[in-house]
Structures are given as structure tokens and as C-alpha cells.
Image 1 (tube, rainbow, N blue to C red):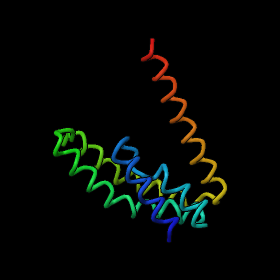
Image 2: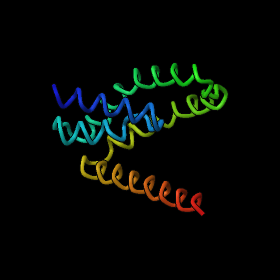
Image 3: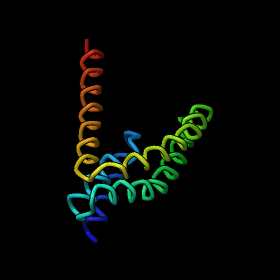
Image 4: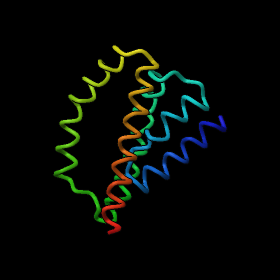
Length: 121
């Protein structure tokens, strides 16, 4: 239970601060600290992110940061993508899914480093 509390708090802070959705911490935390398989961790993360997204959006909206038209477009288009992604995820083994998640995280990290270096010049 303590692990779940720590994962939840950390993911909430990171999601609110960086807008990453919490899954960046939820999925690894659920796998490493709570012993869930990759498929179960990703599915659990999707459900757990709903209250995080609602509270984060509400709070950001109070600061005037929410761009409703872009959010609506992203949300509508993401519905079909999420359904297709679930089908694809379930066609993969747990290790292949874990490797894909790790590769995606590495790609995101590399892009962030590249942009930070470009902006520093």
C-alpha cells in the first residue's frame, strides 16, 4: 500500500508540473514496486490517470493555460488511437511491450535533451 501511495503522489506531482500524464511514473512504478505485468500496469495506469487529468486540467484552467480547441481535437482523435493501441499491445508479449515502452521513453528523453541544447545556444 505504501508503494501505491508513493507512486500516486509522485505521478501526480510530475503530471501536474510537466503535463506528462503520470504514466511515465505509473507504469514503471506498478511494474517494479507492485509487481504488475506490463499489460496490467499499462491498463491500470490508463484508469488511474483519469482523476489526475481532471484535477490537473481544472487547476491549469484556473491559470488560463488550457487551450480547449486543441484539447478537444487531441481527445477526439486519441479515442481511436487508444482503441487501436490496446489491440496492438495485447498482440505483443509482455517483454516486447516493455521494450517498446522503454524505447519510447528513450526517444522522448533524447528529444528533450536535443531541444534543451538547441534552446541553450
